[in-house]
Image (cartoon, rainbow, N blue to C red; front, side, top):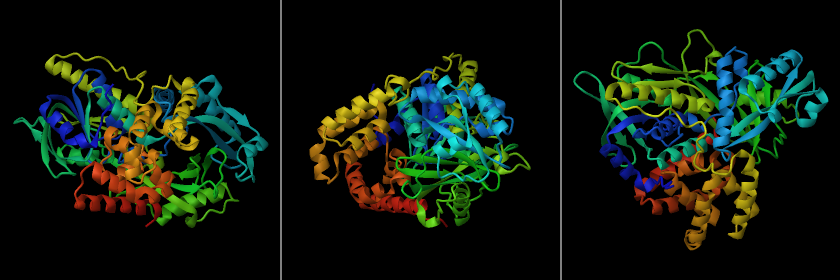
Length: 553
């Protein structure tokens, strides 16, 4: 299978979309847009995605990084939502075990807390039932002593016990990329850094296509399609404004932030879902030698592209940490990095941000624009199926072509050919041994296998063929291989794409960014033929993103 998805071929991909008579054009390259592209392409539609930033550049790289079953929605009696997203977790895991892994979560309950012993026990039991949880992953109830043993840093005062249940952690940006790459390998078209600036209509006001600006080259293109879907996340209302169809329901943006602390400073043993002093719930999760904590849920009306973290946000999360883990004595100086993202929720009058439903909804405009809004990372596949069903139904009615029904439920994603989740540990062992034979350290080899899954063969090939070039560019072979792969196979177009969304280093290994940014920029500039002005621009953007990640405002 040709999985070439190169930033050097962006112009060609744009031309392909212009030359094709697309059945479907999707605006927005987050997880929802990627999911729709994959679903539509596998049904036989000619489909394409335009993304104005990088793929997953908005909400889809800034989540809590959990494909979770939505336990908290039980409190709001959203039983259907829990049932659907709970079952979807297992599907996402099976189709891409390298980007989604089970994570046991501890839910401590306290005297006067949000969850009591009875409500936790019943809640988790209902959750297991609704989510169709595997027998070996069903919840168990722990005594106070067992709870403290699993996480000694917890506040012991008024602790009554804990619930123990499974969530699934993911790399949200890489999940989005693997979906997009799978769609591209099957004939779907997708391009980043191309912004839809206007729509093209026929004389009766029906949509025919879009005018889009390539923000890398400055060129403007007209791309036509039989159907256009607006899956732009936080930006869906801006597109509805251009289409003059923003009536009735609208998007309500809320902001969520996460703080990252080194494990030496916050040696959390175990993922914990816990009460904050104001009765909200927050996650603390160990990952790659760090502990990250979030999230907040506050109304947001600022810049959609770069929502900044404020000192109030930081204080809220630090207070939550010190409330639940009093011995840690966390301060702002302990934060290594952070990220901030927006939830594009559907506005509900009079409701607090945390109370607004996470359900998705489809809006239809008189021009024919189809908009999908709301929803959860976990439910991306069902959202995609719903939209592709609508598009297929409309096309059958209008041009008489009958498309297949969705077949993504058991469709293995790019990098997921590891023999299923049950064989994944064995796959890691075998491929790590191959990496050792190439001269990689155990840690570097294992890291590559876990990040890239079955695509690691391509990285090993880059290492075998590129040792001289790596040396010439003063790069270790593992750094060299991830850079080449990011540009040639994952359309990384800027250093920020590489350091934030292809590797997550900006969030979980800021030292790596500081160590390799100059050499990486020089190598990318050569590989992608940047002008000195472009090199300067991309360097400044990376520095800006680093300051966003490490400084509150």
